[in-house]
Amino acid sequence: MSLSVKHCLSRIFQPVTHVSKNSNLTRQQVTSNSQRLMLELGIIQQSVPGCFHLLPLGLKSMEKLIKIIDEEMFKIGGQKLVFPTLTNSQLWQRSGRLKEVGPELFQLKDRHEHLYILSPTHEEVAGELVSMLAPISYKKFPLRLYQISNKFRDEIKPRFGLMRGREFIMKDMYSFDVDVESAKKTYEDVCQSYDNIFQSLGVKYVKVLGSSGTMGGSLSHEYQYQASIGEDNILHCNSCNYIANTELCGDQICPNCQKKDVTVQCGIEVGHTFFLGDKYSKCLNSTCIGKNGKPEILQMGSYGIGISRLLAASIEVLSSETEIRWPDVLAPYNVVIIPPKAGSKEESQTEKKYINLYNKLEQRIPSLKDNVLLDDRTSLTIGRRHLDAKRIGYRFIIVIGKKSTENPPLFELNDIEKDTQHFLTENGLIEYIEKNIRFS
Image (cartoon, rainbow, N blue to C red; front, side):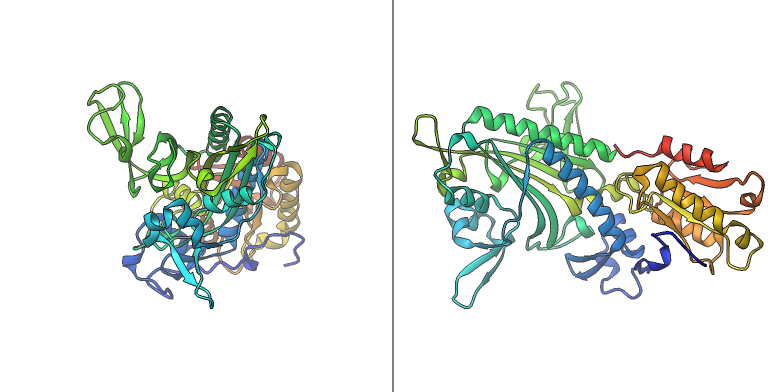
């Protein structure tokens, strides 16, 4: 087959398998539907408990998520950087968290017996960075610094695949403001940005009051996906619409209106915001030179999105037991084209047609550039490839069948989200996809 298309399935490293075979984990270690599907369909592969290889399809999806987050962070003045993963333990001693969080930290010593931490979060590091640069004028604030990087936590029992691992990918932002009022404005800006991110994904979420825990601070919100395997319990008052994590409020009575008409559901935390005040900036001496010419303690905020967890949680919420479903904006590919089986009557009559269709989809729908895949495994039947495409969750499956040889040619379009099948001309097919796909 002579191809002039960029993305062909035969070139993708996607080891499709079953958990019970060719795997270094047991069925007991597969604790969620999303974990099993992502393993079996070649999205991830376990390295050791709690650590995973992110394979090409998984990485392509995650890069889309990172792009969405980067764009939203830029809109609110976020500046992207990378903090060191290896953190001197003395910073955590100064904040008091070394003792509080201790068992969950990966700690190691260098050859000089100096103790370091593989950071799960970077409040201390961000605070120290600003303190090292003092004196800084108040005119340089607000300062909103964020990174997207690998984090580490010594989970006592890793589970749910990417949702509860020892190594994970996270977006963490740290804000610095000159006073409480401006810090609260930053907090509101970031929360609105988070709303934009989660709304763009199209997966139902709830924003709830949360506990600050060992992070500290006076205000906290969590972004939760409702799911049966969720480890958080979310209380919703049916009388006054108060909603919070039960860690903060209990699970029997609404603390806002004192009524018992409440519902409690399980949730997966995918984002968290904290108004920290001076908890870290005071002990780390993170200051600015105020309008009066004197040093003033900065007000901080911390804002996290678990990127690898969010990817898995989206699959957990949307998928069936046997088939992955993605948000359109995160699917590794949105369209797959299945040409005729090799040696069939239709093969020679349709090659130019489906290559032309591939290129026109990318040209006429700019958002589909690099998001159309050709299943060129023509030694397999169309039926087998259709089942594979449906299981991996490609939203639009185009089959080049007998009707494609007619005049005018008609293409079979399967919309797996709507569970519908259509026979359309080339223009009709492109118009249907353009109208129904969601990228915002």
